[in-house]
Image (tube, rainbow, N blue to C red; front, side, top):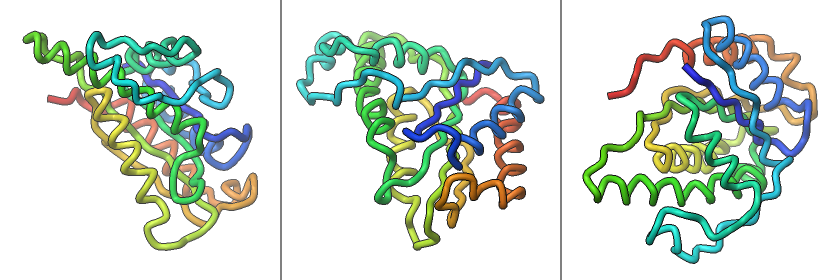
Length: 195
């Protein structure tokens, strides 16, 4: 089981990164091979242009860090996606990567049309934190994550949503959330294959 952590926050050492680190510990404890974390804020990622070129041949016209990042996503069996909530959604750096997975969806669709079954399904696990407890604060990010996993022939298999952690380090006062993150990482490592 190859697990890819994605650190979706542009800030290092923040609450979502600490949740991700706990989940990674859990995955390692359960015997998973944990790949090096993917951090979209450190990548040179242009936004998707919506040019539809990938519909023709499954190749993106943009030449930046996107293709290498997408290869890393494709190599994973499970994805641990951690991020803070920004205006009821994902941070823009992470959202740019999510939008770029459109090429992977088209690549899979072109293979399906040619009669080739898609690659093994991926499992997704979501770790989100928000500075508020407002109702539905996580809804936009959850739907975006589901759509991203769909592009990867994957499914959301678990999530941890932690409200009321605004300032950096606030998660350290929530040991139960860190324990839940560790358990989610273990679950990711031990999750049976999808049909």
